[in-house]
Image (cartoon, rainbow, N blue to C red; front, side, top):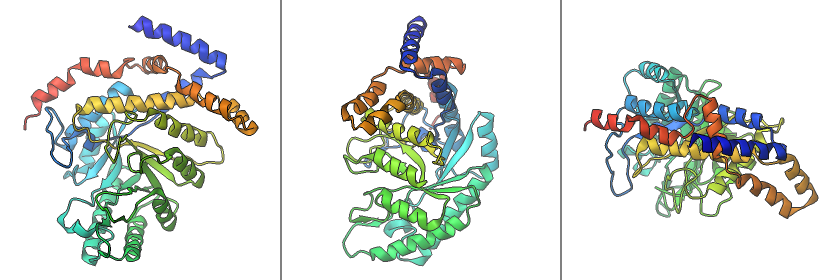
Length: 400
């Protein structure tokens, strides 16, 4: 097997060299790639109807970090873990940070939970009752404090607020409440901490959602300040939405703050990223690389996964997700951008698309295997993890 992929890499390297690709620069970019995994991706989760417990699934924040360390160990590009509060609440966040560091990890984005308390039945930051809004604000401020303690510079906010029936509440007043509440949260965030504002066009609200699309999140960010940006969740759009256009627009406006990578078939399915439409993921990375290479653009994007693996083993699914993201990035790095720009200027639509397709059709598996070997990793992370015995061990150690 090793001989096979090494020979495939040699042939690919020759082909890329003939295309004029700087393969060493591509490998350097792949080695520098960073992808944050979510703590909640390692715990039991389910559908709207049932939670399916899995053997060995993490329960405590410490167990989640131990699982995340396995993903980083075998991929080399997932050194940070997002926390969700209060799911990951502990008595001593300094001790949690130290434990993460002992595993070679850091603690990443802090995610407030504004959807599980009974008081949030009619909303949280947009609730008509000022006391409930104060409760939600205080929770966000608690998360800002946690971020300070663990050295995180990101608050990642998904707002589930909205209404289910016409006349339930005043839509414009809810907008005013949201701006007022987040202004207080933003004021408590020290530089360079950023507020990444997520959006979702429906669910759990079905008449109107207070932050229903990227445009609403963008407007809110501009009202708050330069350190408020938009977070793009790949599952939070109507079917057929051109997500890469949204990404390009936000890059150009300096308001693309981060991603929650996942995939969907119909609604917000939280499926393994790249499992449904890998071409879309590739096209998104095409826009990201275009922004990275533009000296006039300031890119500071947090690449985070947001998935709850319901029927797949937790660590394996996370490794698979990271590998799919690596593959999309690798392919996008191979686009001949000089030739593409020439074809675009000439209005040669067919050739422009062929240039993009040529990169997408390239088998980058041997390239990624070579990169991993140069990083001191196994060329196939999933196979190496399965052979490690970690899953069998935690199934024995973690009893309910």
